Image (cartoon, rainbow, N blue to C red; front, side, top):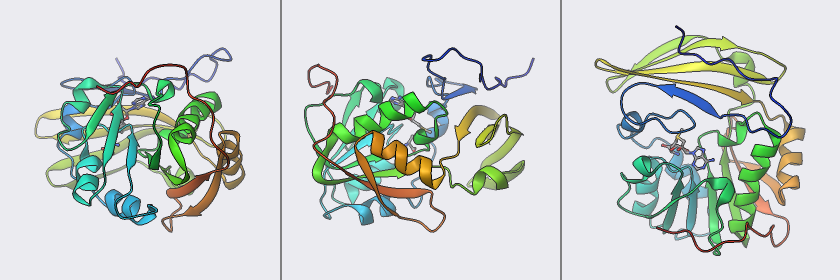
Length: 255
Ligand SMILES: C[S@@+](CC[C@H](N)C(=O)[O-])C[C@H]1O[C@@H](n2cnc3c(N)ncnc32)[C@H](O)[C@@H]1O
């Protein structure tokens, strides 16, 4: 039996698309991320990109979808106070340098605003526009008026360029396979991660955000595109347009 789940493009209007699907040893998050695998990864260029985009060197940061804190730890080492949010308690259990909140981003209402809200890991590329709005509205209701939102998307060029490949780094073999383009601007694929005899797969469908769609979807959430932070346009900075939408009613959800 195949471990790949085809993109469900015929789902009823209003129903949320699952962001991903994963297999392999240990706990797998609802969007398909293998916890044990993410715990092995080191921070790459992300902390420096975020730090450079901040309004001050000690900016407070709300990190959405923090996972095991791969980036969190580096941001706190750079001098930021970070609140790390993830829906997976198993992911958050790895974080030791920041306050953690176990919640769905869509439901988050901390009653506090931050200098910088971070939405990385291509979460913005979810195919479903309503789902993307919920993520961005969370950013908007948690960012200070003079603050910024830093977002990582799949580089727009990647959607046409992506091909089945394999590579190895630090004992981890990466393979991208099963690529399909089920509709314009949509790409479905499976990533394989292998470490020794442990093999994880993560299948996903991502929507390309062209310039117009990106600006429109940000504006709908009360955010304005500010600038790209990398030449490949995979990292960008947005700023709030107004005071931001009110969050879902509720108490501070910190754990
Ligand atoms: C690809 S992992 C990346 C983790 C981390 N940002 C990193 O770069 O190492 C995505 C993380 O986002 C979390 N996540 C995805 N969608 C979420 C949602 N709607 N609410 C809360 N957490 C979410 C997953 O549980 C997972 O830990």
